[in-house]
Length: 201
Image (cartoon, rainbow, N blue to C red; front, top):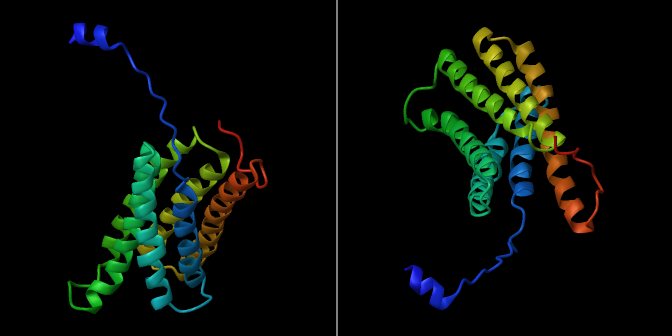
């Protein structure tokens, strides 16, 4: 093998990544769906098929696709985040739809406490990862972790007031993700900072 290398010489190839940035797609899917669900939690309108459809197609499938594209770009954080939260939305839709079609019973409050707590724990750990990324993502993940833990309190206590607080906080969280997504798009299109997302720490 060594002799073959000596005969052929060494060839170095530079491979340029020409694929687009999938993060804005994932952030928009997460952000818009989060805003719409939490407008319901804050009491602005009833829960309906609009939220379910967003949870399946934009919050769910779009984020899973973004996660797979992040995998192609060798981004472990992006792959884990987008794929996980895409499947979160699909699982949340399943928790609503499956009992309605006879596929199991509606989960008890204690089960939903455990569900939201595990997602809050996951998000809190992912937040630690954002400390090496930009400030906008830090805010998205910090506010999302807080949202999950507020939902834990709401489910544990049955408090409508806490759910409404979670709703308003979730609207802020979702809008921060929408801002981060659109900032990345505009900054890339114009080749300069149009919408700041904060320095890498």
